[in-house]
Length: 82
Image (cartoon, rainbow, N blue to C red):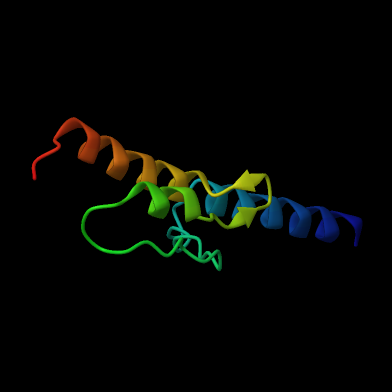
């Protein structure tokens, strides 16, 4: 009977190893419930940037949201066309 339990344990570990290697398919992309900052479309003003609020996630602000806003501001500052 003991050998049967060992066989089950080895089988479970084998299935876990195959699943961890990704051979059973990939996990879906993570779902986030963090709200995106509300910013108007088009050119941003200094007031828009000052009033931007980012969602606080487990370890601080959402880095993707902050990076997106900083990239947008940087593009506008690099190309100040009227």
